[in-house]
Length: 125
Image (cartoon, rainbow, N blue to C red; front, side, top):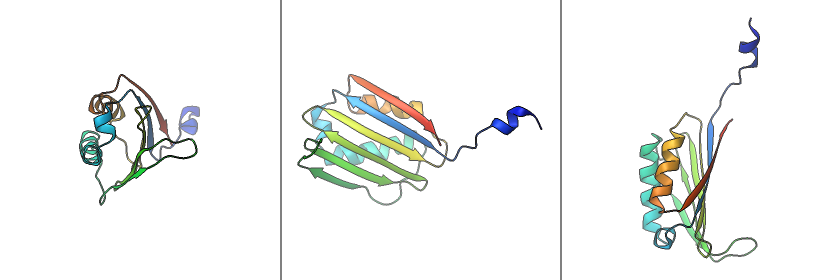
């Protein structure tokens, strides 16, 4: 047995963490746009939605200002997000137990939210 095969890590899933800055406020404050984002991003990264999204608008508190939060189950895990309206920032997390097109999700998310800047981190679990 070679050393390299011993050191290979088994991948159980991918987690894409997105921080989206200076978003269009009309997108951040629209329940309809959130649903549209979830449908479109799932098709782009080839992940299947499972049921309907849970979407709520919160009035802030603690570290959070007011804004929407959502959770959408996938057949292979979930997409979650939290928006801060005042700061025009979105935090989105896509996790799946299958391999997905993470770069496509980053490009699409920046464009969809009409953001000036996006930071992403991909973690293999």
